[in-house]
Amino acid sequence: MQTKSNILLNNANLTALPESVIVPGYDRSKVTSGIVHVGVGGFHRSHEAFYTNEYMTQSGDLSWGICGVGLRDADRKMKTLLEAQDYLYTLIVKHPDGTVENKVIGSLSDFLLGCDDPEAVINKMACAETKIVSLTITEGGYNFNPATGEFDFSNPDVIYDLANPNTPRLVFGYLVAALKLRRENGLPPFTIQSCDNVQHNGDVAKKMLIAYATAVDSELGKWIESEVSFPNAMVDRITPATTPDDIAYLQQLGIQDEWPVTCEPFHQWIIEDKFILTRPQWEQVGAQFVTDVTPYEKMKIRLLNAGHSVLGILGSLQGFETIDESVQDPLFAKFLRHFMDVEVTPILSPVAGINLDEYKSTLLARFANPNIKDGLARICSENAAKLSTFMLPTILDNLAKNGEIECATLIIAAWCYYSDKRVDKQGKALVISDAMADEVHKLASQTSERSTALLELDTLFASLTSSSVFVMAYKKQVVAFYDTPDVKHHMQMILNNYSV
Ligand code: CS2
Image 1 (cartoon, rainbow, N blue to C red):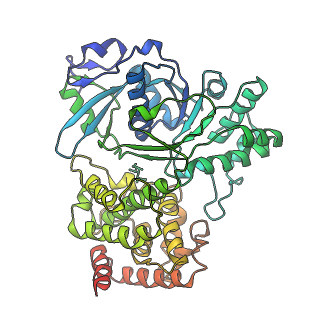
Image 2: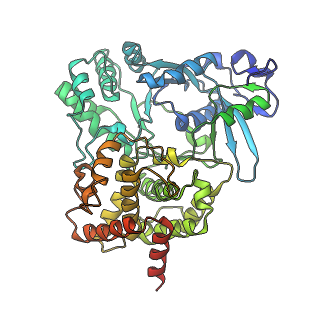
Image 3: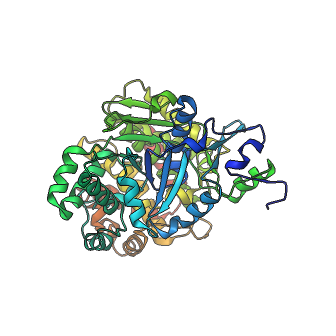
């Protein structure tokens, strides 16, 4: 509840905030926006916007403000609330020992909504001040067919965008319109910086954008291919969804912030150093620039993100609510570590400067942070796209070298049951938010008649169903799971078999 004594978060009130709250160490009125960011969710605000805030504070180089962009009506709430706060928000960093740091982030300098005014977004991206367009558009946002890896031209929004290039719906329409304008105006292009958990995220963004641009104008496609740079990057910081308790916590400190962000203390950003124009020296505030990010991103996506899916799916069925609750169960922790050691580590390449054993132990400790209440509903949202990015490639890699696939296969079988029944062990309805939920449910619910019905979902499983080893392993797991739908029983069976 807002009381009279609460200080509204905005520019004018920055000096009135309690001393325990760290405020931006630069003059916000002098900030210009060298970055346009599409997809201003919690993760962007705890990660890139945080790094950029730190960089502007430390360097005094104020040309790196971020103009946030939302493309859909669903982004209106974020725009409206942030606008009322001069785009300021509090980052609440929660340590495992209960210590909390509160930091007001000032790097967001504007917010445009594409569905209201597409031209404003295109012009902003096309203006000379913009050096980088960065993206957090989620795994599904790259619009590729998971089975073929090719741009999905059958998407109705793509068909719409091709017919309406000045009022696009998808990010590719905006990027192409803006790059076209820059080219016509004799300006160099911007760098496109992907911040999503997609392996080779820059390469994927490049492939999709070129496919789309070529369909618009083949010359423009060629120009983008030769002139635009797409650094690959590994991004990491656990950022749970904001809850009313987070708003209430700040109110107790006397601050009224309508949409703060909470996160863990750990953060990592490893980026390929191939920017066309200037860029923030993010390395001064902890980012790492490398020539090849491949081993880092593979390690992170296959261990952390897949680890989240392991806990998310099994934990949801068990009736757990959060990641820390799941990993604090010793059997869950043991199973997760087993999956990491036996099914993921063998398919990773050595990673310079990283001790994998320590990395995995740190992950388990990060997951167990009791102050980060990372909801399983967030983790399981868009499970279909996440599993095909985080988990299925690990099964494929293991099949190619006769490696173990038992744990990952159990996850797919458990996900089938989860998608079919949509309730936890106690019969409580699961919150499922997935663009593919209906398709998955339809096939999953035929499992009792045809045990491998889910595998008929070609967009996900086409490359796996050619392996009889996988199909047989899945059949065995899914039949056993439907027979005894108890996740702990199956985790224990795998662990027992392994130690025999
Ligand atoms: C999570 C990520 O649900 C998910 O995809 O695994 O959001 C994860 O928390 C971040 O990638 C951490 O860096």
